[in-house]
Structures are given as C-alpha cells and as structure tokens.
Figure (cartoon, rainbow, N blue to C red):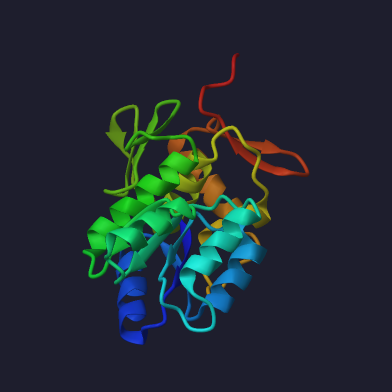
Length: 225
C-alpha cells in the first residue's frame, strides 16, 4: 500500500518511513504543508492513505486537511501530531481526520491503524481479506489458498493486496503501478504483467481476469461455469 507521509522533522520522518516500509508500505515523504497539499490534490487516487503532521512549515496540516475535504477528496487521513489538547483533537476530527494519534507512537500501532483505515475505506472492515478460496492477512503478510500457505514475493503480495482491496473493480496497469511503487523505485515496463502471471500460477487462473484493452479485475466470487 502506498501512503504519503507529511512530516517536517527529518529524524522522525526518516524513522517513520523506514518503520512503515518494513511493514510493507510504500512511502512517499514530503516535509511541508504546501508540498503535501500539492501531492494529495494531484495524486490522491494513487495513495491508500496519508499520515499528516499538523505543525508543518508553509501551511499548517489542519489547513491542508480542511482544503482536501472541501474539495471532496476522501483519501483516509491519519493525523500524527504532538498537539494533544482535547480541543485540538476535536477540531482535527471535525475537519475530516479519520484518526488522530499523539506523538510518540509505536510504529506497529501506526501500521495497524493505517491498515484499518485502508480496509474501512475500501468497504472491507474485516481484519482478513477474502476472495474465492484465497485468504490474505495484511498484518502477518501471509496468504492461504484453500487453507494451505502460499509463498509470494514481496511485490506479488503487494499486488494481490491492492487487487483484493479493489475486488470487483477493473484496475489498469498504470493504476496498479502507481499504487505499488513509491518515488524513486524503478518499474520494469512489464512488471505488473509478470506478477499477475505468477499470481495466477500460484492461486489459480480464475482469480484475476484480464479485461482486454483496459486492465485486470480480481473476482471476489468464482465466475459461474
């Protein structure tokens, strides 16, 4: 899952990015409010969620958040801030934050909160993602097919998770690339096709269907025969 991190403290931002990457997130990091606003307005559809500090240079995080919600940008936003007063928390939530977390935060708790936000925004409140006989655990990063463990590469897992969160929707190759890769990561021209080929071989040919000229769709239920 690709997320945007807006944090101006270099040491904290580096630690957050590293910790979230270890949990399987692809993290893009900006250090001021204007950069966060610009990126979210242009690329909101390519992010699963945003982690937003409030005390950002150039533009306060609450102003960024308020502007996004005025423009009907519904991307899940987790506010991560040192502002712990109750009125600050109330204002952040009233302005449209989906979660409000006080620094310092345990990195594994932050990862769990982000996974929960992403699941709920995709209309899948359950901890585990299911499609046909495939069960994916985002926290443990494991996959079962028919109750048996399936070994996937990191990128195969990330692609499967993105498609299961968007089950039933046709996703283009470009959309999938944007959801999987953070800034600076090199993407081979046929990477998505190769990973989908591997997923079909490991999980069954009927799980992911090709929509010719458009992209791919993961079927939550098996197609009728």
